[in-house]
Length: 279
Image (cartoon, rainbow, N blue to C red):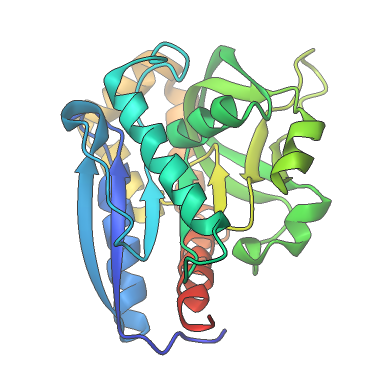
């Protein structure tokens, strides 16, 4: 892997958690810190509370990560924070599409952010699931996923942490082609249920990529979190003891969630920062 020569990068995290307690922001921060330390790169990090404060980053940042978040990706249409969010997205698109603006800037969209982009770009049907998806699940690569640089080093299938009540199904292949994008991965096959498999990862264009799962999930940290008595009781009450036991066991398997954690976002950071020094 080519390590970029620049030694400082400005990174913006768009926080969509609306002030709710979560593990996602901690995990993103830790991945950035670990990657910077490993590659002798200083990360200048700023966070923007989009939903509570209508805060969005300027284009002065080198790259962007947009987080997961609570609630429906359908019920916030025409809200002030969504208007601010998509205004930022449009500006970033215009920068990347301009022949006069360099370097190009990459952005990664996680779970709730991914669903918002799928709705915005009309790449599929964003809808409520029949039941909550919660746990550790296999993700299967599509053909384009095998050629995706951000997926370098992943197995097929690889494993993800999934926690969502909504999904993106019924892909609009014409729209995806118009964007210059591709479907990279879909959820596990469930032949015993009559439901279409959800889209789990999309490259929207050369600079925007997203996943419906949580690639930032830190297996060890999450396992410890789930073993806290209060969190254990919440999960068991909602999903049953067997689900809790299975999730903790799979989180501690080094070939599953830790493997995903160590590849997807670090690969994205390599790709995004390489872009900055090859113009």
